[in-house]
Each structure stands twice: as C-alpha cells, then as structure tokens.
Image (tube, rainbow, N blue to C red; front, side):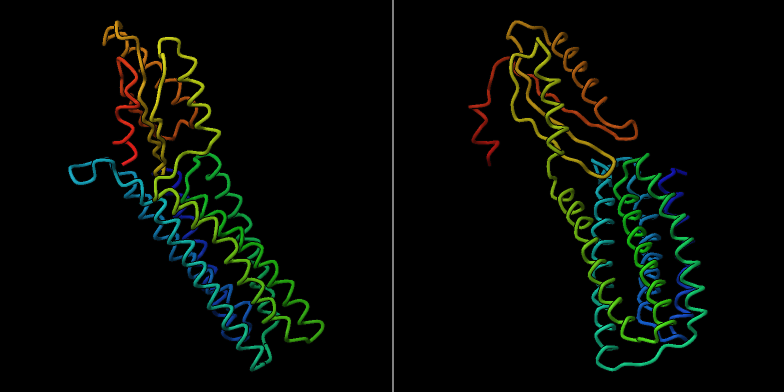
Length: 298
C-alpha cells in the first residue's frame, strides 16, 4: 500500500475517534465551539474516506476508456474537500449567530475541556504525520488533508482556550464569538485548496520556476536550433509536457530521436522521483510555428 493511502487510513481512524468524543461532549455541554469542532471532525472522516478511494482509483493504469489514467481524481478530491470545509463553516456560522440571538448556558465544562485537550494532542500528532507524507510525496490530496487538519489543530486550541476562559469567567458569549472566528478561518483556509484543485482541473501550466528550468534545458541543447509551442500541465501525480523542437534539416531521424531522449531525461530530473513525467517532443526539420500559429490559437 502506498504511503499516501496509509496516511488516509490513519487520518480516517483518528477522525472517527475525534467525532465520537467531540459529538458526545458537544451535545451534552451545549457548546457551539465543541459542536462545531465535532462537525468538522465528522467532515474530516468523510473526506478522508473519500480521499482513500480517490487515491486508490487515481493510481490505476490507463485503459481503453481512460487513455490518460484517472489522475484528475486527486484535484477533484481536493476541490470537494475544500467545498465541504466551506459549507461546514457556513453551518457553524449559523449556529454561532443563533446562540448569540438566543443565549443558552453551557454545562459539563470539565468533560469538555478534557476532550479538547485530548483532541489537540491527537490532532497534533496527525498533522505532523500528514505534513511529513505531503512533503515526501508532494501529493495534492495529502497536502490538502494536512492543511485541513492543521486548521483543526488551531481551532481545537482556540476552543480549548475559550472553554477555560468560560470556566473561569462565566462569560458565555465567548463560545459563539469563537465559533464565528473558527468559521471564518475555515473558509479562509479552504480557498487555496479549492483554487489549486480547480487550476489543475483546468490544465493550468506548471509554476513559472519549473517552466523556466524546462526552457533552459531545451535552450542549452546545441542540436536544437529553436523550439515553440511549449505546453505544460499537471494532473495529480502526473506531469505532462509537450513542445516542438526545430532541428537542422540534414539531421537523421535517429540522431534527432537520441537528442530528444536526452532532453527528456534532463527534464524529468527537475521533478521528484514519485512524479510521473510524460514528455512529447515533436521534431521539426524547420520552424513551422508561423504555419501552425492559427491552428494552435484555435
């Protein structure tokens, strides 16, 4: 089993435990902040399970129906995760405003504090693990999951602080105000997840730094007189690159092919080993960019 899939299994298991703890205490205590955290953990569980199946299917080999594989399931999962985070934040915002309008006292404060302490510690270990996997694999789904649980870590810490403050001051208004703050922070953290996923689904080009490195490799190859129509995109763990390389008209097809293979090998070294880089080099005996410009623009 890939380490990415193991990470989703671990996050799903942790989320299930946190849901049980927080939901029980949240219902009995009447705390909007704890209940909001419980709902967020329930969504974490749903998303982590979905991420597991997304990664499982995304790594399947291309077939007769999906010629380029199913790698776009990864950015799709990230977009869905970000959207779910946003909707849960809106629900928490609604509950917090309702409690401000119709105040109600909290109970079982000691139990609530104990649960949030446990949640904070458990989530901290999970964030460390997911961040390690995300850094090692550069996987977008795990990166989104790590960011999601990192927001949970901050919100758990904020809820814990609020519960302690309420316990000692008796000011119940702290709870819904904190709920509003958590909701706003969740929406803010979801925006980059959705944005990155949408850009990948729309086949946005690679970052400028990586494109620049690709250009330098092509330009440093003496046998390539010129190049045009460089196009790049990323789909989950797959990277797709294509360009037209202009060779001297007298070069043999064999020599041009060898040079193209050498350029491809250099380009692949730019990316992490776990990235599957697909490069298509169109070998031109002359510069046909003007002839094909109208077709390319279309």
